[in-house]
Length: 142
Image 1 (spheres, rainbow, N blue to C red):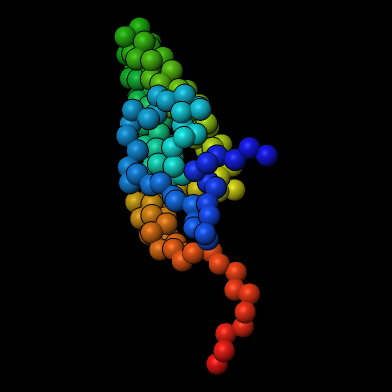
Image 2 (image 1 turned 90 degrees about the vertical axis):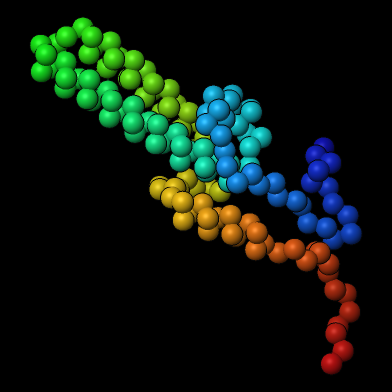
């Protein structure tokens, strides 16, 4: 079996958890293998940003559609509607990729990712066990 040297520990040490407290919007354009190198916290933060962008693109697409309907199917609005639709599809695909990575790590994908959810998640990481993993082989004397 091949193991990553970073996860092999000795003397009861615990695996270190890497946490960057924010994911940059430029991470959205990373490839799937690159996204897989991000921490789960970064992916959750990124998914929140992707969902926001996706929602905005959907709103723009509908706005341009309605404006085009009112103007008698103006070609100007049709171009913007199509462009917004392409962006909407792009963000939807990215959301699916990030959701699948999160699903493999957590076993589920959060329906809503709020600032309080992220704060609780980060707090759980910070309050995680720090003590060495040692199996006691003798009874404690009282």
